Image (cartoon, rainbow, N blue to C red):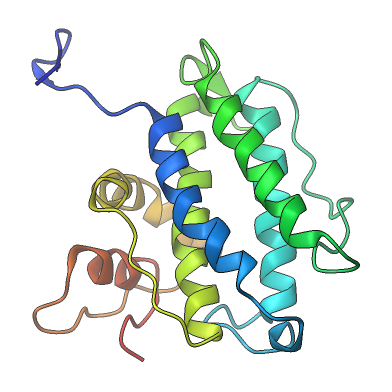
Length: 198
């Protein structure tokens, strides 16, 4: 096992590796969404499947910029993802660029974004969106979704760190009591305000 000598604790896996793993779950899920499912409701009350895909695409593109310490644009200028031929390919291509962006030297170092947050924390937000919104899309379209345990392990600490502010900003709902015998991923979902078995 590799150790981080500064903290005498197991070193974290590179964020790009975790993003690659998450993308490996999210991309096939998105590719499998049928056009006639785009209007279906999702666990995110403000989004149908189309809207959630648009949001996730905006995240995937903007967090490439944040990896490079460049400004992001969350004004909705990317338009609708799921229109016209090839939208599934566009999502896969941009998700691959996201993974590459966070693999670049220095991407995880320093601070990035308008709030000057630690870069790894910012990158983990993209990991969170790929994972939790992956579950949202799976639930909306009747599919199973089980992220990699290493991704869930990384995100458990991230969600605990971000939750107070995320709830104040209405990014997370109020935490839900996880069901008896809940898995680590179900506990993570509950912490973001989702009922994992609803």
